[in-house]
Length: 212
Image 1 (cartoon, rainbow, N blue to C red):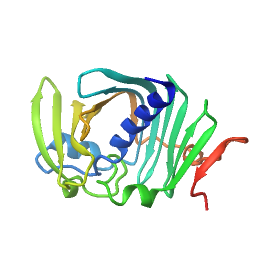
Image 2 (cartoon, rainbow, N blue to C red; image 1 turned 180 degrees about the vertical axis):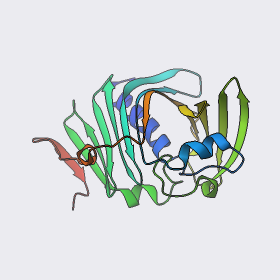
Image 3 (tube, one colour; image 1 turned 90 degrees about the vertical axis):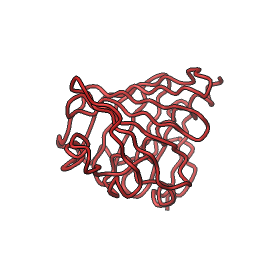
Image 4 (cartoon, helix red, strand yellow; image 1 turned 135 degrees about the horizontal axis):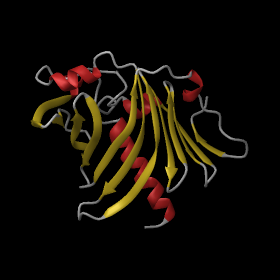
């Protein structure tokens, strides 16, 4: 796979996560309800793996993410390529440092026709997903989310908890790809500087999209 394709795979995997789910929890899962209720901010290191329908690893990426509900998030990819995907609540910015290219879209244009973002706090989870606890034991809980909308690019999402801590998210798409996010050093409801969610295109970068 060439360099540009690797970058697209990484970004597509993240969009599955961001466009995949909502904000509250199913009444049948105390773990999920306990995690999402009262969630204001979240930050963690992440490891992202994208596997195709044949089980071949397409991308392995690492970085750090910050989320501030509702609607603001930032994902900094550090390896294998330096990329940043950021929402300031109004616009979604995607910056590729090596290519010196910025793509910008209105959040409403990107998100209104999809299930609500997983950690954004926009809509209750049960409005857009059927929820089923698939396994529980040894302090570990896995919850299956199935989109209610037939228009979703995501066919299913699983949330993996260790106790009351979110450890991983796995998203399955209509192309047969599986994107897995594993989280470490997760911090909940810590004060985050508002500047984290502000984006200014670097001097000399090519900017494509709606900046008005």
